[in-house]
Amino acid sequence: MSCLFSLGDADIFLEDVVSVRPGKWLTDSVITFWFEWLKANGNAGKPLPPRVSLVSPATLFFVLHFEDQTEIAASLAPLHLTTSSLIMLPVNNSTSLMTPGAGSHWSLLFFEREGSAGSFWHLDSSGQANVDVAQRLAAKIAPFLGLSACPAVHPMACAQQRNGFDCGVFVCAWAEWLAARYGQALALVAAGQEEARAWLPERALLEVTQADVAHLRIRMGQVIAALGAARQQRAPRTPTSG
Image (cartoon, rainbow, N blue to C red; front, side, top):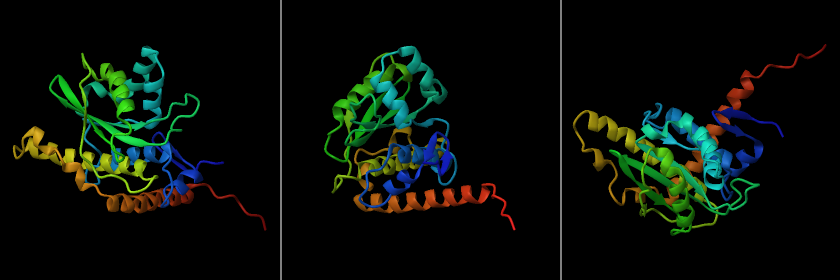
């Protein structure tokens, strides 16, 4: 099967396009793709601030399931996480070392830096089904964020999915909301119009609803279709005889 197009670390195949359709389980590649798209467009159509980091599912699978600290450090080094103020980490409950992303549920762990410390927050559209794996991931990645100790993982109020397949889209929707809101807050803080911690009220993520997730699926499909069409237009044409 050939790759339709690539964006950053994301390679999109036909199976990924199909996974964006209603009622489908979102593939790892689409989550990676959306994170790459947000890096370039998630700040009101502009690139995200350098202080915002989105880590791919594949990288986090490696961090969670492997023990070689040197190799983990090497995989995370290009992301400059020690200087990031907001770090988003998609969590999958897969236990298969042979098949990354083979689990049954996605959630979002994010880290907000405050001075030399910070806090982990966990968003889960199915209660706190992934809280154990989120805590393990926080403990594994904390040293690579420049932290001397791992902060507690705090659950954050969020909308709950009404089906068995939208968890990955919720992760993408939350990441988009957080990235946009944080970019706005940084601008307001720089202008002296907002306190640094005021950007994220306790129940703010309840703004992201099941209806928003349905709309995001449509928008994801449109973005993927547009980039795929652009790739086809750039592809060299095979000469015809006659």
